[in-house]
Amino acid sequence: MKLAVLKSDGSEAGRSVELNDAIFAITPNDHAIYLDVKQYLANQRQGTHKSKERAEIAGSTKKIKKQKGTGTARAGSIKSPIFRGGGRVFGPQPRDYGFKVNRKVKSLAKVSSLTYKAKEQAIVVVEDFALEAPKTKEFVKVLKSLSLEGKKVLALLPEKNDNLYLASRNLKKCKVAEATHLNTYDVLNADSLVVFESSLAKIENLFA
Image (cartoon, rainbow, N blue to C red; front, side, top):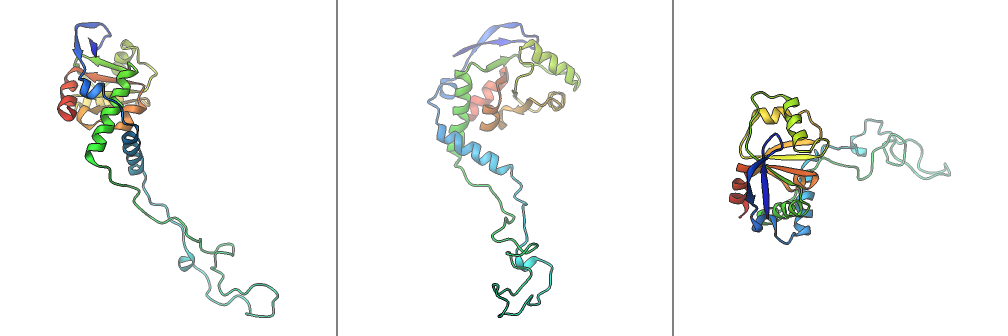
């Protein structure tokens, strides 16, 4: 699959790049995508939820009424779950929601997500550029030139770039990441991928 390389002002650079079929044209594996996205979302959970059980409730341990002769059920503690203010039965406890996904499955999921974006023609290859200062309005200007304003955008950089990161940080629908740190969720969650030309080599080295 060939894509024209664009400049940051939206004009064509006069050359094209060939996307590797082993990465952008495989048979997608939906189950691998499901596992990878499920793990990613699970890892976002803090797992700090907690409720008190009857042993942790502050209250009297005195027997609240006599055992027999009341005409109602026997009760031995005000901290029982059947009373208001009592402990909770089988309440949530702090836990780690993470689980293991094999490295090859994660790799397959990432490549599958890139294939889906290629099929949707949602990949834009841009000539490498840099911002002189971390100005959000300059980055928005680039998005406008690429006809991506208002869309969810994931920009894949060949290496860390503080100016681009800071310029995009305040944009709700835009995320900037290094190509070697891409994840399945971010790729699928974006409407369009803006891939820097040098990033393609990084992606090929990572997956091909």
